[in-house]
Image (cartoon, rainbow, N blue to C red; front, side, top):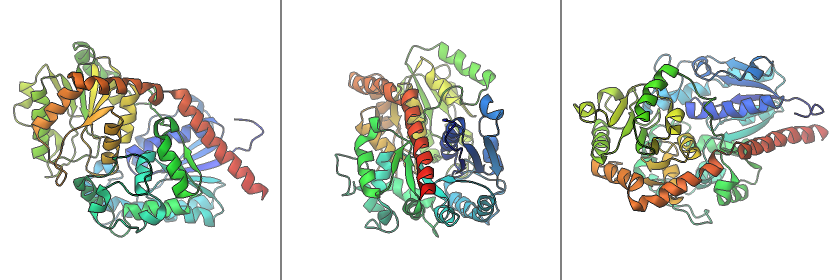
Length: 469
């Protein structure tokens, strides 16, 4: 940072989901390394989950963690502090508890010299709090520009023309470029299940978007130029790409003993022959669909690693208990079923891995395309994953597994066929080549640092212009 520029104090306040906490942490580290003071605010358990700070920040006084105890609300399991600890129907209680952080957070801001607040969709009350305290706020969206464009301006999010779930299954008329990105009916219905009925997610995002000073998006013009152009016209406020924030192996948690198990197994397989299967920390499948997925992997005939999360699923069973009886014995040697945390980025980086069967979370897609891995897309039942799956399918870097649009069901045959088409068949060659070519954008650290530098400059210059008035 230029020594002639004033050092700012920036508060960072993400939503309580790991897919939000980590991108906010990446932006926070970059800003601190530019010389600005950071107060990264979250609950104790979520702060403990974060990787260690780089040595240069550990030895400075620029980065401070501020822990706010999460208030208890009826319906929220004791000690739960993030979405990954909850079944989808309990997430609304987490949002109610999150809203109760308004008072302690306001107290912190009142008694600090914070200049800017970088906030998330859920804290719809925070931009107005910041404004009352004379602070600027930036809404940082961890979803891509295409998804943001689909949701539209604040007026649409806060009660526009789309009133029924079916209204979200068509491309909105304000999208002025060719697009097939829209929800399937089962996706939007499930997404609404995790909303707080008192303040639905669309209402939260709409109020936050309306009241913030600027809107930052985890993406880049090289991937979504048309969507960014449209967003700027829709929002009529600064829209700032911050880059894709691709993770590096140095950023990820390390467990060398655990990694050695995967490495030994992967070293025995042919180059680009293995499918890595992981559906994120928050995707919930019924036992029936878990079985269909298992049989599809088995019938594909290809080697695979399947990470099965040990967390509650639809019927209340634990994830590691609902794979078919005898499945692991039948696929022994060809398939590795893992019932614990897995070093995803290191696995994807291994030369034996060719494809990624994913829930289509934006962070997972960024990791995969940064390494050139082709995608087999099985969208999750909440958030934006269905929209990401449509986008990746249209970009021809992956293939969606065929599902019933009403209830989201799929068959083992559709799983096996999609895997085979993507990984082996001649028609999948274009998908594989396109995914490999995406590395030029998705893992270009210099490109994404350029966007972060531009974002930093915007905050610095806006502060200077505000104070000169």
